[in-house]
Amino acid sequence: MSSQQVIDPQVLQQLQQEIQQKMNESLENADLHSVLEKYGLLEYRVLRIHWQCNLDPNQLKSDDAVDEQQPNTLLSGTPTASIPEIVLVKKALCIPCPSTGSPLGCYC
Image (cartoon, rainbow, N blue to C red):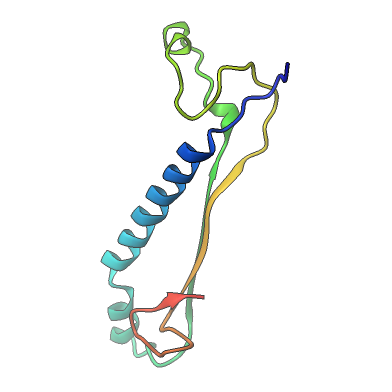
């Protein structure tokens, strides 16, 4: 029997999609192109935003005995060993888009 917890691939994929969606929404709502335009920098390809969201499965184990009795939908019920962090989302956004010139940016 393995001593390592296994991440449920379907739940992990859903988590990744939701985090990516929220990050995309926050960047769209930030209206960064207008800030660059305000300072006369929009015509230059000066702003690149890189972000990465990691999940540390080792932190998912609760110290609370009551919580440990509750099933975790992300992890299987097997005992844990040290598990490396999982990269959920890794993206870069360029404003303006170097390909199309769109002031709203694109993923590069």
